[in-house]
Length: 340
Picture (tube, rainbow, N blue to C red):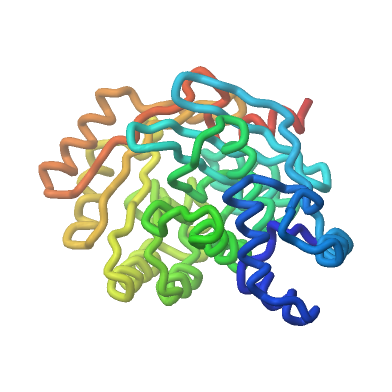
């Protein structure tokens, strides 16, 4: 049965009109779900019994099941069970400016990045918009606080699940839904060039992050299979196209792997690659896992890399580390559960 959480507001309005029901009822239903966090249709007191019965017959309002929570001072990592029994993760990160959630977009991932825990378990299926929306609702209900920003950077490649991602964004961005501002929503991609260009034409004010992780094709192809399909030259052209169309800055994500891509040579090459483009580079310390041989770059390497970019006038930050005390690597909690 389709989840009621899968429906954008206009989808729900269309459904009601096709069933000869006034479409303003869609906003009332959204208000119950996303403002009041009431998920039982029978408790929606301004809906008629006939409408409630119709909705109950056609849609599910089931929530996800929380299988496990790992908590640290600034981070909660959630392992959720979906309606079909599959497992996904989401991460709550507490910032000075509010609560942020990193959501998963697929069960597993087919991108096959060699450093990524998520990719060790291949894609089972795409997540529906409702699967993603409910990750946020469950976390809000758990912490009794509002989520103010969302990053689609968990398990999966978002642009490999493009249509569902677009619906998800419109549900959480809707003023009648979770009302999360577009500029507080970030989509992260490993570099699917055609989808980056498509996304540029969506007329959204959301943020785009591109996982680059290497400054040349030889190295990037070794650690990211996607580079063989969409090499750096094509990727950079797509990023420039996106910036030209949207006038929005792009974040370049760069995961620092000890003695792999954290050398001075890589830093200089990266600076040359992105110079003059409206981007900023986010340097990410690697979260080690027991299943993958890569190691975290020493802090001295991180700061030397940072300094080289800074001296070359590249906008650069080092991502604050979250969840060192827990299974911080994306997909690690799910993998540990699946492989028990």
